[in-house]
Length: 138
Image (tube, one colour):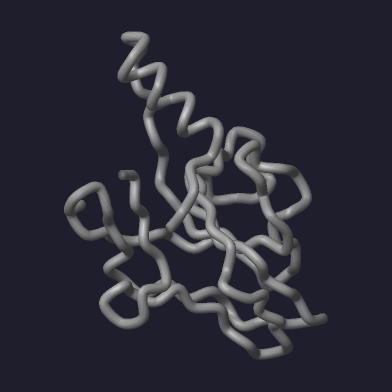
């Protein structure tokens, strides 16, 4: 299960209980983290390397009983340079890790850290293939 970020949780509470407009969500991207980004989106936890780029999150299935999953395969570029250990995957809005307005929406820890070496490719497969990413809100 993916966890809410603090900013998304606050937006939901403000919208549903305080009568405030829900903020516009920009295009969403999968992001890789070398440490827990925490609900507050701690700086310095996202992978930072020349080969790395956030990848469009793609399509998600219509929710059933408060749960959805990615319905498309998402593939990051092959790793170049030195090894990277990925511990968490997140969904963020904003294409660039240097965008100061980018917001973490959801994150989840991998079942075990993945050490990536040169030419390794990180893939978030469709739920229908491997169950890589499921969001459950209830």
